[in-house]
Length: 158
Image (cartoon, helix red, strand yellow):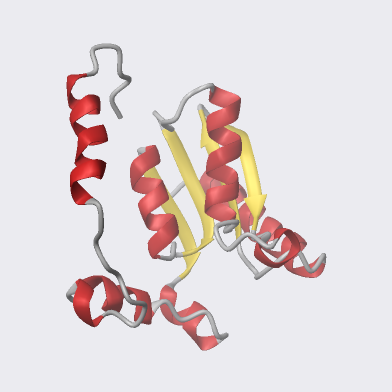
């Protein structure tokens, strides 16, 4: 970890404080860096936007992808004030940055009421015993669209 990495992490932590202090959402912040320059930053905006997906990492990823004109964060580094939750972890893997730095860990988050352990446990459960009922329907109709995708010659793979 370099001094520059520490500066970027301090900015992510400052974004967490900014969002929390303005009552935008929880105490989480994120910056995304490419070639030594911040290209996007965000803080949690869940409660201010009524959007359960508006976590700091997702907000920053959306802004970074828009700035880059790409759905991938090639050669980018993510600095986040806390170890990503399962949703943000998925978003990060889909965005494909080259590295992630985080300050607080999931235990620190759980200690202030942000405990994602139940989601990790739900993922491991069979669909039939999850706490929110899941029921499959119209699979044949859904697969029809999947088959069209599989045969689509001009698709952009991701």
